[in-house]
Length: 155
Image (cartoon, rainbow, N blue to C red):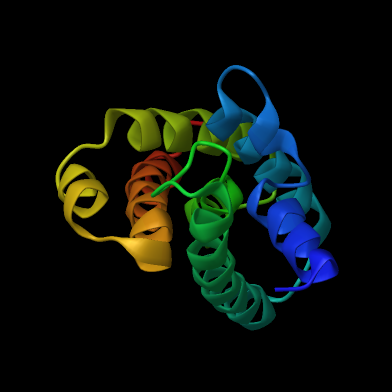
């Protein structure tokens, strides 16, 4: 792997190096997700969904390679999966600061708490797919809760 290729993988995997934060690197990576979401939120629903699918595929590919670079399975520096999980959190939700912030908080809660089956995925699925999939499911949980909030017009 060339030096440039390696540096690009590290840059992407660490969410523009936020994965190197000395504490809560996953939360720092999720902030990158919020910032990128703000940039892509104006896309049409179909383009947003295609963008998310492409980003998830990229995340799996990058995470697989980053594990080899960091020589550790699901290394804490890898936070591209948090970005992908936050993107999933925000699917079909209004562009409103209350949902953006609530999505961030709920995604972090589900990602950290790892309720079933997130915990099973985290423990049993390995490689790039394992790194990303548990965050996607945490994002689905956060999204479902926000959809309930939206449905009942809680805010």
